[in-house]
Amino acid sequence: MINRDVPQEIIRVLMDHESSQMTSHYAKITDQTVRRRWEAATKVNIRGERVTLDPEGPLAQAQWAKTRYSMATQTLPNGYCGLPLQRTCPHANACLTCPVFLTGPEFLPELREQRQRTLTLIDVSERGGQARMVEINQQVLTSLDRMISEVEKTAAEGTEHAS
Image (cartoon, rainbow, N blue to C red; front, side):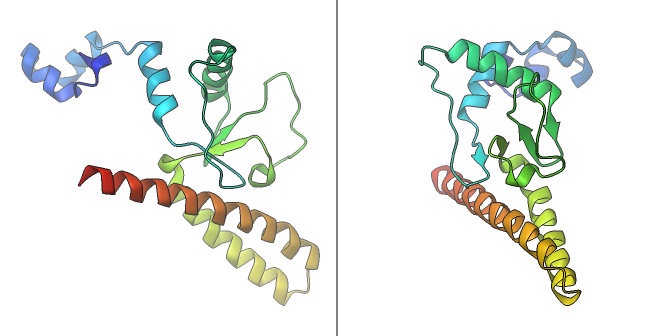
């Protein structure tokens, strides 16, 4: 039932378990369920473009394995790194200007907070005459604005469909 999207609390009641921990012990989510949810979830790159996996593509299984491994090992505070593990990242602490960075609605609060911090940093840098810091953080702000806009648009679409 858990893999057919029946809520765990409903399963607990149906199975007459006394606690959700007991239900959790038996409710094992399959990789197919995780993959289906991942493919359905909104993912946005630094250009604010939605990113999808083609579930029918010739490399779909290999792409899913790579994605699953990256999610497990390269989750960031505000998204996921899509860079293969065997490659070295040339963007030390600059994920928001990196072309393989992905994010989604679950990170919207962090993205909004980061946008506010970036605006503050730009303001402080402008007042201090630090043109390079302004330039770098303006690129970050542009990426944040694009990603936030697309994620908010997706959330609004979801709200329209629910009503």
